[in-house]
Length: 386
Image 1: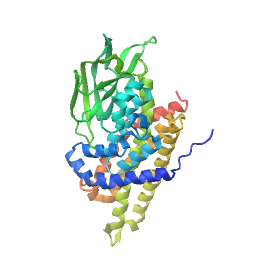
Image 2: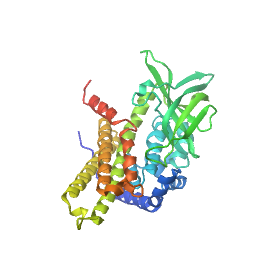
Image 3: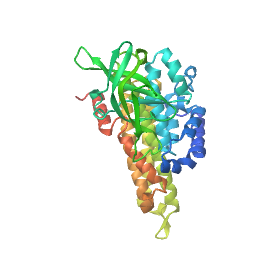
Image 4: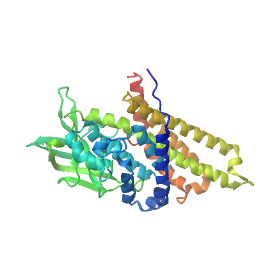
């Protein structure tokens, strides 16, 4: 089978440069403030929408930029290089929030819901995780019963990104809609608009990292939405979100690469400036080896991530590659940010230095959109193991 190429052409190099320029000029001056206040960056999200970043992989006819998945992960990487909160807002909006509507929604649903999302006028969220159903997604407790042409929804979702902002359009949730012939739960995806009676959005979580991103608990109590809000076919929700998660894992890998790159650049700059024992840290082999390992692992993760994105763009199977990219990149990011703090020494433990922020942003990448343990399970299954 022919290998998929993912060398960046001139167009993509220019695109990367434009996103990096935006991140440096618009996001970086605000990064410390966003970390301190935890305020959601409405103005930056609006500007990302104006640049076309909020709908990169969606066709122009649906308000998108008509780009590919590789362009999307490049954008996530470049934003994450400067600020994780803005990056996860972008990532969750596209990979999870908008994807079910684009890939599985009807033409009418795309026209009504996807267009304002792709333009960045509204934000999207996806509600999968529950108090008792995280890695064990089949243990979903939220239920939706079809009554008189409406889905009546009851249940709770947790750790949901982008659902509680002033521009949140709504959330696509997984819900048990019946029991199949095989006795297993029938899981379907249903879109619930913000403001629907019975849909309650909890207060914003206080988190270790990603302070300015919007993460909340969602509760549904006899929440009624029209039957037409079903995404795709009834009972295919599990298959749908697995496909969306494949794409999401590639984007999380890109977010990890960007976060690690940002921390590495801070550590490299500091090593060239900080003087100890009469020399800059960069003269000491112990520090040189740390930086060499960091640079090598970042480049490996970047190449793996780009390859997975290229496979998705080519319509080729990529479940294994997505899991591998997410696993390696997220764990690499944790190692890299840890070493960045170590190079800074005591200063790295102080919040006024960005490496502290990168370090705390890194940990969740080993958890969200499938823990490292789940990625290893997926890879093992793809290898044909029981």
